[in-house]
Amino acid sequence: MAQSLDPTTREALLTRVRFYRDLGLTEFYRRPVDPALAAQFAAGGQGLASENWKYSDQDQTLRTPSFPLLSAERVGDHEPASAPHAYPLEDQPIPPRKPFPAAPEIVAAIPAADRAAALQLIRDEIGDCTRCALHKGRNKLVFGDGSPTARLMFVGEGPGADEDAQGLPFVGKAGQLLNNMIAAMGLRREEVYIANVVKCRPPGNRVPEQEEGATCTPFLFRQIDVIRPQVLVALGATAATWLLGARQPLAGLRGRVHAFRGAQLIVTYHPAYLLRDPRQKKEAWADLQIAMRELGLKLPAKA
Image (cartoon, rainbow, N blue to C red; front, side, top):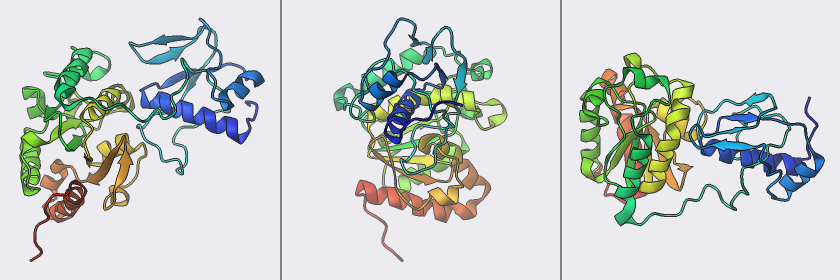
């Protein structure tokens, strides 16, 4: 068993590990606890910065040559401070690559005129992606679509057959319904931005697996940070899980506003689900009206 840490040191460690997971880091190598290092962590210092610790920008993993692997499940980016930890951790300090900023979740705003170019840089970095197994059955990678200065952004699960063929998100039957939902809000599709948790179609439209989601979400988070939408709408349970960082029933997430990366996050049903069960369209419309209130859009008059 690892040596117990005092609460202050443990909280400092957890804060830093969460930040690395925000960046997409999913594997850590551990070493014996050094009391001096633990004290440095608690004081906000850099800890051990030696050449033994190497960082790979290609796979976003911290590696050291001689210590066993400590794996931790990643289910998303955001974990409320009051929530039970989604990741089982041992009481071991993990030296960071560099000192943590005072508020790592705050990302400097990119001027509106530069956001299209910033998104293109992310797309160029993704390239002809082969980072996970989804590329094997891909026809076209689906990056995202819409206004780079959108106040409203939708995040779905992953591309379907029509999206895979065209390289654009939500262009099939579910996309047509989403277009109608956007129009009902008094907006045009060109005014919002649409993306998915994964950018390649999962076989048979299955739910993205852990590795696939963990590979793609860092790029999704960067898209969100560039666009800086005022409101994010998570379409379905998969999108909500990866954005909020916890698997919960959709009923427990709907009907309220969640904070996420500087945006107001609202959870609703995926349009594909609404096509299967049209009775839930009324509930989805109630969710969209929450988004409209956050955006200051005019709500329809009650009959």
